[in-house]
Length: 303
Image 1 (cartoon, rainbow, N blue to C red):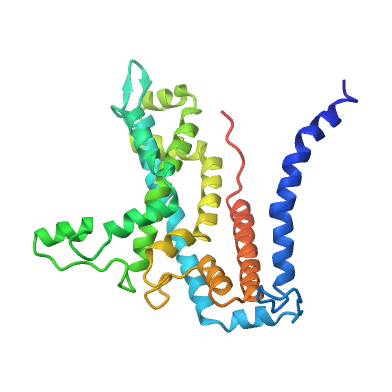
Image 2: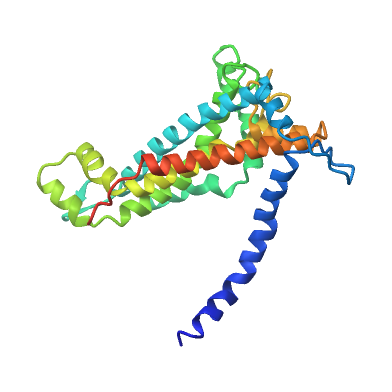
């Protein structure tokens, strides 16, 4: 039986590994190769130029502007999303208090779980189109249409350099919260009810239950959530491409690396330079994930 186990496992793995190697690993390797060239995407000849593309990157103000935007998203996207998701998850699982000696969520919690998860069913491009209309500066916009009813001046959410990136960040949070509500709810559901009941008998308030019981027992789930949201903060291409003024505007106020990679490939035919940006994005994402897992590592709580 043991002798035949390995061919059986290999038979299941060989197809997905081959697909992953062909379409993911090979693509990464090709991007690394092209980053050292000046290939423009048309000629079969590839000229190697060493580190010239990377030198050019460090002198590119648009590149550094995109890096600053990722830094802002990297801080606030996980922070806002996790805070909101934890709050709603706690309400849906423990916020209803105790009944017959058992903790429960608020009334209608099962229905609210479906409502919170609904944005996950929408493609990001569709979410971007919807919120582009919500933010519209004329009366057709949901927000400015309401403001106009009270005689207030319209807010230029996507045309104001100081508001544009924050407006897109709000959409990212709205789209992501539902998934993490479900994720944290599953984590809270795995916590034995006896722990909450014992804490309640000792006179613990809801705040104490949240900070002293729920958070420590959800630490591993929070760690994973922060990594996933950090990776999402290094993307944001779809929303920026659809929602922003002039794709990354106004005046580069919302540009991100994914958009600059796309622009350099499609608009300027600088495949080598775009690949160099992709390599930098790859290492930034990998470094962030590794550092986050390292810094937030702690001993598991035994239940």
